[in-house]
Amino acid sequence: MDRPEQRGFRELEVSVVIPAYNEEESIGACLEELKPVMDSLGAAYEIIVVDDGSTDRTVEILRQQKQSLRQLVVLRFDGNHGQTAAFDAGIKAARGEVIVTMDADMQNDPADIPRLLKLVGEWDVVCGYRRKRRDSLVRRVSSRIANWVRNRMTGESIRDVGCSLRAFKSEHAKQLKLFTGMHRFLPTLFRFQGCSITEIPVNHRPRRWGKAKYGIRNRLFRGLRDLMAVRWMKTRWLKYRIKERLE
Image (cartoon, rainbow, N blue to C red; front, side):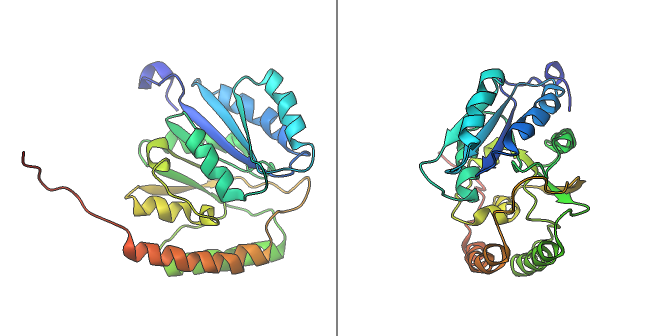
């Protein structure tokens, strides 16, 4: 990523958005690993953690992290509203020109972020895909099935819609109107807006703490319901360009 003086960075260039739900075991380590990566960019940044109604010590740990990490912004929901709501709140609050999204469980590798950012500008949206999944066989199979069905029904070719590690221009993200479950279809929704999208392989690490918040039932069966909505939206999305304006 070019240095600020080369690109004319705004005061705040990059916003990292991280949903967190009962991540007391990983959130501290996640932020501690993320900070040096962001510092190395030479750009102003903020880290927005959206607490999705955690019932463990996640918020307490975030308060502690806030004392030493001035770039940290914490948003707390009044209850558990889901991953899409957390992404939506973080995107709306983001002040950076570019937004990066990632998970809090440390399966995403912050070291991949500079590679994503390097391509933003050439592309509107840069999606990571997990080259080597470090999940159980059941999760890998269910994810592949769900990914194949989504692509088949939406006409997409995204390798890994379940990977949260992405970077995109804020101007496009803030135009999105999201509904529950729509985080699974973010690349498709960006495509509806005419955004250019590319994918790069990213590291995926074994889960060290806790357990997955999403299983086969809410990944596949709820996803199928949401898929029908996205398929309908694709046929009704307004697409027009002003050819001429006379005054």
